[in-house]
Length: 497
Image (cartoon, rainbow, N blue to C red; front, top):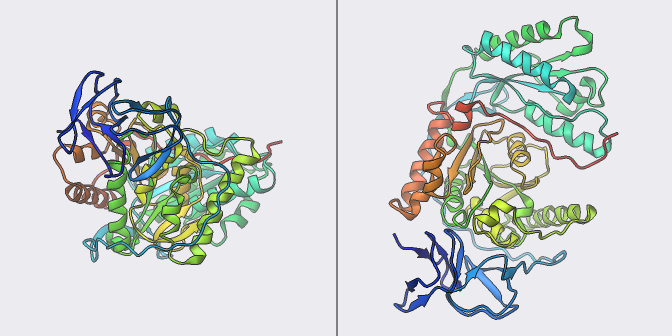
């Protein structure tokens, strides 16, 4: 394996595929020798051509920032000598690009799913317990634990998702919480849902029912804890009724066009935009070409690469929706007095990501090359097939929860650093490098690092696609499912009394 890779012919940097030492000599594409002037950690950047102070440094063929000083070939390029080139609120112009060729190999393919009476399709047949307010988290946890022991052999599991909200929230903040939880109530992976309230909270059951809208009373049950003599016994009885209802559903062949994949990256490294994210993009393209749905979020990690997505808008209306998505999120930063173009997290920096635009250029590759068909507000459900952009921050727990609420039955989660986290739906961890996959076998489901070793992009795309079909069909469970890791987090933006 080569010790470095250049991602675009115009890039003045290459990416180290192993640790490199000052004094080493590398042979470049044209046969010339490059003397390293600094140590370069694995997955970090190495300069191969001179770049003057203030000039753009390019990766993927796009600017990832500007040099802070004159840089000479052989230097390690990172936060100490380059900074973001992004500033302020930008103006955008609609410049549509031709649609990329489609991968139609999945057309006509099926998986084994659960078809619900409303036409939605689940890949799991679970019972979900959703509480309207955080002060009954433990009550719901106890009901779920006891119900799993009683009814777990009849369904794919009984799960409760703890959260701290629903009481003392005001205005839009309360509405956002209600909208998010209501969308989870409608999720097709849940054959049945028990909504548990306390009785005195802002998000009381009667108000929450308005947020839920229409529902099947056989599928969704409600319990107000303050009205029950023994809320645990009542809750268990209601879950028993839901388990009876859920047992009616059996897996049956369903076109892959009914799949909705959430796309997420967390704890990136310098290989994220080379291996795992482009791989997920290839899978997303295959799914959307077959009529399915891919959902891309993490809006702040679109900053610096947003025009790539804007130019792939289905029409001018969608273009302006993307502009609104980007600018509204920038205003959110401004309202709270924060720098819009803040550098990536410490873990991202350790992994070789220097600026937000570098992170974004890698992050947006999860969306492949498909046309953007719609923009979805936070907490709402996806309405159109194709590639959707979903309003949510980059935070792993918050964004994965938003993807599930949007309707994703499965989330593809790329990582160069590793995490045990699992969302409310099966969360497939895809490592960017082999070292992580081998070290954290209890976390990682798929190793995209093989792209730099022994597998082509086409081969790995086929491998990951087949694993997705197996997981969707219930033939395989993700590592987070096996470990029992199921969590949600709600985006907080407002006043609590």
